[in-house]
Image (cartoon, rainbow, N blue to C red):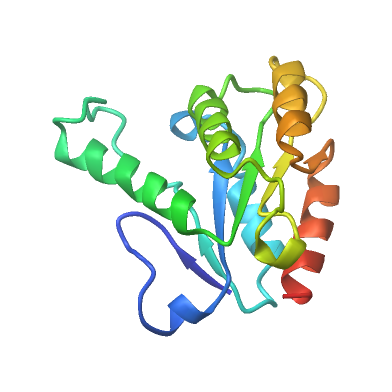
Length: 167
């Protein structure tokens, strides 16, 4: 497993490995570090984990397109969302996660998931535990776009690992 974080991009031999984008709750560092747990679970597999949880994030950055550091972060995320082989979304019940909701809607709309991509296996996997404040919205979007939805993190990880092993 190779993990990349912004601003680093996939390069060289990493292009031949399945890329998994970790979309989900961060909330400026307030959310649990679920990305680390998922990366640990994938450490024995030949994959590239695209983790947007930037090590040197500065919460004082103005969140405007005109801010080069903020723009770099958002464009890194959008580029890696679009180019990932599999996208994982996790909604931490202790957060609001407005960006994750927006990204799920964007990706569900772009790909429509009629044929799943990835050789018939799911391209997007979503984990939304009970207690997430907009779980009903997530359930409906996933249902309409035919996106697999998991209530537990463990269930998500099991299917993700099985999906990678069968590619």
